[in-house]
Image 1 (cartoon, rainbow, N blue to C red):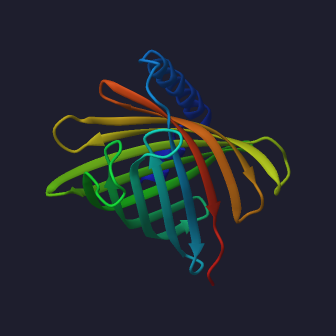
Image 2 (cartoon, one colour):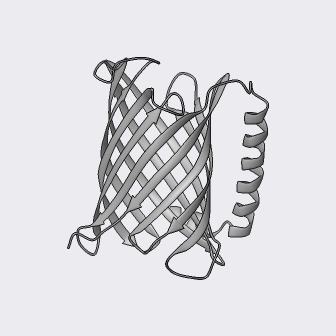
Length: 232
């Protein structure tokens, strides 16, 4: 059903909406106070094939309040993917996320979160541009407080060369987070990066992300490694 709905909406229209939404998000971000300190996220992502249909997702994100070192959050996430076909997959996973105030000790988080999540990813193409739609549902236990959340991310990957390896590319995404109760809008993330694909298993990205929460926004430098070796 979701595949049919997605195919009925032309990719060119999705590209237009993505660019429009991104420009609006950037405009809103730049209108906020410019004197907030820039943070950084150091990230690793892995998707390791276990069989023709199943793969293992692994993820580590070390998030800092500022550029040098002042931990804000450590995100450890894993899950099992089922590949419906080359352009569709579902996943169920678990995340462990301790969060810290500025100057907190690494061993003394302000809050600790346990998270179960489910997601659907769908790919589409407009020429050489790849669009990835990610729909995610989260069940979150932050200390003793349960919080449900829904997320949608639209990612565009634009190759800068026709080479299959040793190839630079651009990546842009916008992701909206909605709570299941209370205040509906949780946050929005807008991201842009320059990437380098070494081969089909290894790539790197360096970019910047703006995170907007109600009444507040902050910029983060992003450095990511993607490593996807087969395990069978």
